[in-house]
Length: 174
Image (cartoon, rainbow, N blue to C red; front, side, top):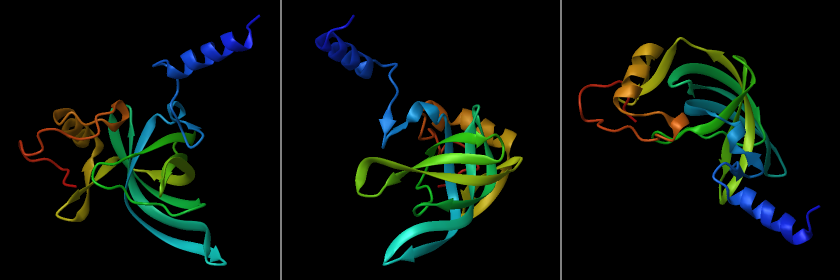
């Protein structure tokens, strides 16, 4: 049917197509449509022979889904350290079990295109977390969504930096 040359051209065309999935560290990012912002975490690393084997802990984060954000508390058990988000940084995520278990992708330090996954056991909240005056605060999810719309901020849609932060009072201060 296809010769090896035709197959190679077809594979290159599919890979370069705008509809082609983006891969990072062997993960198909199209399968991780949600975004997670980690505000705080505590962790305990377990190691042997001066190498971290696994890390466990808990924390607080926001999940960006469906054009809004909801806070959640979480516990985790991962193969490496879990970093808090810097500024408005978010991590790709997907539900493993809706409302209970999220899988997030984390960058591997020193390896720009490498990612590791980590599962978070979550307890969803009716509010969103945000930082104000260096402290972690809460705001009703509906009010936070209004802030997102006003500042054109939606990490799920690639809008990763809010605009017009100086215009009016808002809940978020990173």
